[in-house]
Image (cartoon, rainbow, N blue to C red; front, top):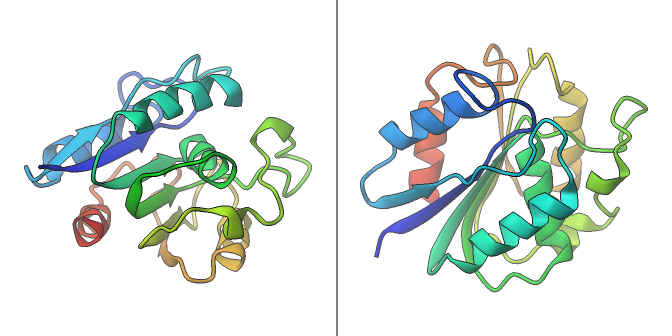
Length: 184
């Protein structure tokens, strides 16, 4: 059975080289044939609703079997963390990778309550073999302080700090492929 990777994209337009489209295309061509990669189109990404994204995520997670690696880019990472810390999930999650993920409610510029995590979200996550936090210092969308907050809340996570990948991680990212394959 192929190992399964589920990627949840960012908010905003996803066509061309916008949003997570580059990351998705890169992973589709770069991860081993031993993996089944999927990335569902999330509803209304330019005006996202946690309730709608949660419904799609629940459906997609129910289709997975065996060891699973979950990846969330930006809002996709927020949705994965919120879902996993609030809902029942019986999957064996061998890896969780969140990339450029906002920590909602951290400051006045990130006030969207529907995406807020509980203060104890980290203790409510299911058992996950490896957690990775990816962020670029030159992220022009999500401030670096959001990564620092996640690193504090998830002290056992592997933190991957980049200098020049920006928010969209447009360049090739061999570290991501390596972390997927080491989690699988």
